[in-house]
Image 1 (tube, rainbow, N blue to C red):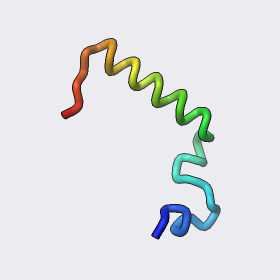
Image 2 (cartoon, rainbow, N blue to C red):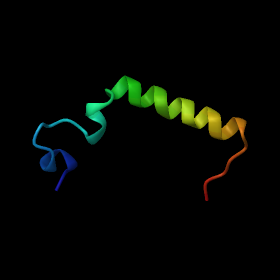
Image 3 (cartoon, helix red, strand yellow):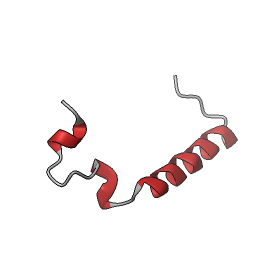
Image 4 (cartoon, rainbow, N blue to C red):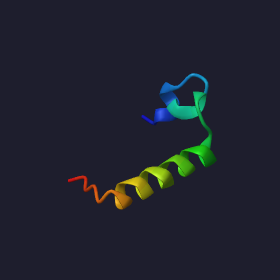
Amino acid sequence: MKLSDTMPSGRPWFGQLMGIPQLFACLIQVNYWLEENKIRIL
């Protein structure tokens, strides 16, 4: 079963707030913040 099969709109769960480009921008910003503050996720 795919996630898209569970979503009636066919959009990803984050589609209400942002599209794919905005998601990547957010992930890049989070990555920068984690590296800048030397935070490690184990």
